[in-house]
Length: 387
Image (cartoon, helix red, strand yellow):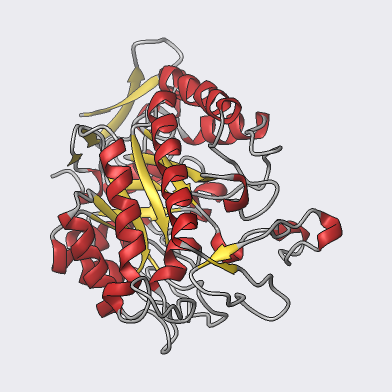
């Protein structure tokens, strides 16, 4: 029987060939919001790995929504055309549907890239004004955001809608809205960042109001046959922050608005850091999956194919999303398929890398007296044959 990790999964008009997802990973390599040749190489390489879906790094829906000056954007014709060039190449040569994460950094914007320290930009370093649900900085020495007015909310929703329309024209197969890690929507959801006294603050229903309005607007602008998901915190990992029960309420409301999948992570609204171990965020994916029945991704140091398989077979999640594991091993899917007895997807140019077609690649085949190696379709390629 094919491994559960390599079973297909339908999401609206898109069917994923397997349950392995390349998680969004910021590269901090853009120039004025535009992708560079680095993005073509990075995204193009990952698009050949045969995963169920590749979600590229968050794009700022407006310039002030970028985390750093080196972050991607999707807010004008130039950024749209540049991303379309990459997606066209991936669709022509790759074997993986490419999705896009829409983001707005909110009060965590206007920073140096992590490799340059990650601290907030100074005024003479090109800092720009930030916005948030309340005029509360993320931490000491961080910019104090302007508390958003209703007009600001309308502008941010309009920016998301415009980016959604651009993403469709650029050819993306799916969208994910970034509602986690303390960025704008996540900060609205968290009592750590949202101290508003109006209808957009207070209890969980109030804190959810703006993120739900934004999601509904994006869903209306995104084609009905294309999946739309939400990355959300299953917890803030802080007793004073968003709880798992709050996250479940948010997920149920998103389901009612037509959300097709959840990408469940945690943290980022305070400096509190959780203890780390493989699959440490998976329990929150499980509670949201059980509460909603919506296909759900688990994240968090999932590097072992057997752990990924166990998460699926145990019902904790429907997909596993892997980030740094793919930076270290861009063809992780091929190894997982081989180890779990499934079929990996190889571009024709790379097909001979399949261990099944590579003589004496693995000692178990060498030592099996029932296997002989015989010429395949091409004389220089040997294939295993059982006696």
